[in-house]
Amino acid sequence: MSTAMLIPGPDAGEPVVGPGVADRLAALGVTHVSLLRDPDGIGIVLEGWAFDPARIDEAVRVVFPAGDSTIRILHEVERVAVTVANMIKEV
Image (cartoon, rainbow, N blue to C red; front, top):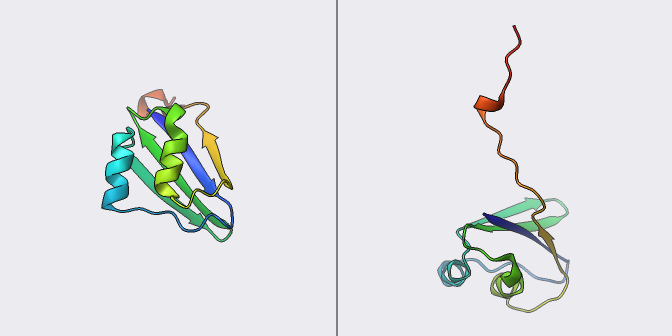
């Protein structure tokens, strides 16, 4: 699964999400979109098994159609799964 996080600058405007955007993101292989917010700003996480990170610029234009170039893109470096089976119980 590929994951990328978009962090818009202050002039990027609000991200566009909705049925039309979902269809366009799905065509890029994105299956999950998470919107995150804190007092300083927002972040958008895009994930998908068929999502090709090489097409991230297209995904940015879908979510931010104004075409602002102040959007930081964080690419996944590593993914680690944590499960109960990996826990060691001390007696």
